[in-house]
Image (cartoon, rainbow, N blue to C red; front, side, top):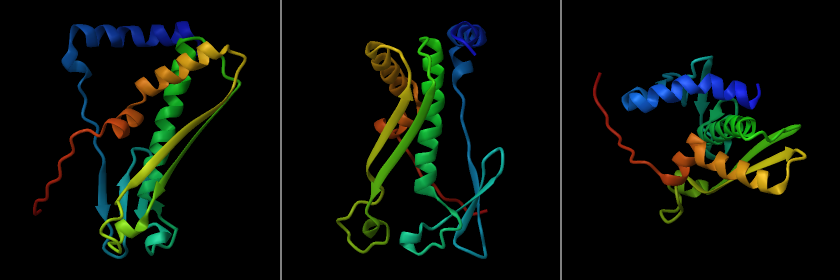
Length: 169
């Protein structure tokens, strides 16, 4: 796909959102089912069933997916798609593109070993390794726009309002 094809594909969508802003407001959903036999949760991904469990550093077997890994994988997926889309739109030819995310955790917080230790990632690093002949100013623009338009990156960076509830079924 080239820049013109991308613009042609997105033009009617953008026009609709300009004339009807409510059409752009979409609620994404995820659903999981707690497994009665093990410490795991089955998550419906839309394409397959993912089974999440405890990380080995907290007693897990390592056979199930770690939700921390899944968060980083979602960041990599979103950043990779965004990078490719932006590169196409601004005509930066990518011969190679790799996306890496890593995050630092202190499992003492998660396990309640140390009340001062944070629960969750202390730091997340996202890196792009690209093979291209594009000039540096185009790469700078590519990075800036990828950061700006990556949904998962912006969500993590800006910490949206989150609420939690529980109800009996």
